[in-house]
Length: 133
Image (tube, rainbow, N blue to C red; front, side, top):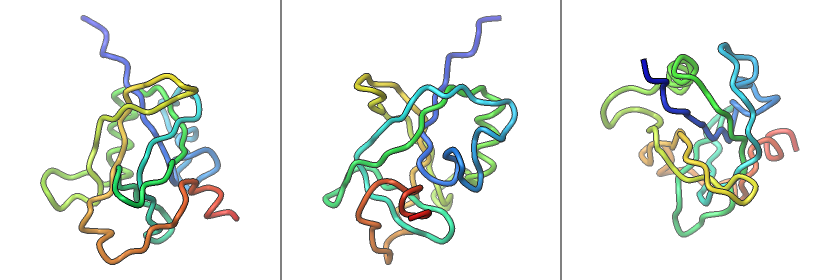
């Protein structure tokens, strides 16, 4: 059996270390790779944020990059309530994230634009600082 390709995930909200859904408390545990950043817009939805990639108001959004297993990816999909079709609150994307200056292809859960149409951007890209500040 060939080994499954290595997967990485970029987490920017409640899945970050110390967050409500801290990925480090999940099983099977992920491997921390490093801090990463991507250009986008963070929105405050309730007790969690949503990230829209790119855009005119884009800022540098910071998060953590982890190496994950297929089992953990399925658990994350459940937390983010990924469902097929256009109604999902989040969409899974594969994006290049800069991790200490080198690109790493990561899964990222991007907010469905429909859910942030009436929302104002947070104006900066660090959910943990915003939420605990």
